[in-house]
Length: 263
Image 1 (cartoon, rainbow, N blue to C red):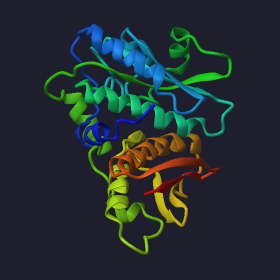
Image 2: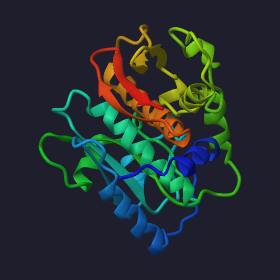
Image 3: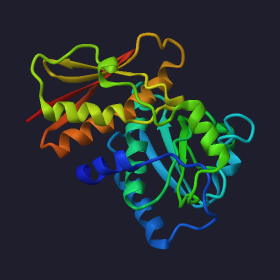
Image 4: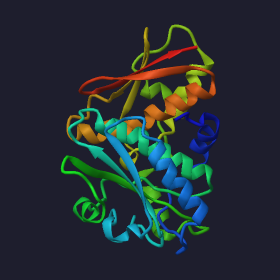
């Protein structure tokens, strides 16, 4: 399906992670739209998404005791990967972020949950195949108007709104400054990541833009590739909104993918 690039580009800047929700069911129209979007937005065959209309509290633990715990939400989206695909984690990050941005354009609040997911409990509640795993979920709903104390504590601890400057994320510098490309990379810089690690690194290659995991990340490389998948979508959203089309070519190890774009 066609990515609604302009709407999603606005959502990237507007979105904030929220963990405390009003105990209110999703409206029928909103639930129907998200359910359909989960079915239609499957850019990679190894990843699928599912809207679950029940509280995610039974499958998500707090980051530090009660801090970071999800409460109040009456629905969540689950992101499911075929673990036989070596590129599945990056593909899941890309796909899940698309669903989250779509929910944001609908005025709904969300929060990426991966590391705090009780995966066994999640898979008992979601019908999956033997080769599949639920890697991440997001609550979906309307957050309480003000940040709660625990949300403020967690945001301060993780520095969730702080982002590294782009020059710290670049492996090389383009020989010529292209404002459109700069915009794509700025959107990628704003991507969310686990504990706000921002593990991605960008390089300008003759064929396009390469996304890699920073060399210092040797452990949990697959999880960092998931983070990079989120940044991949942000790059493509920026490109499409600037009239630049392209396609992704997956790579191996720390090198995640190359976006081959054309003006």
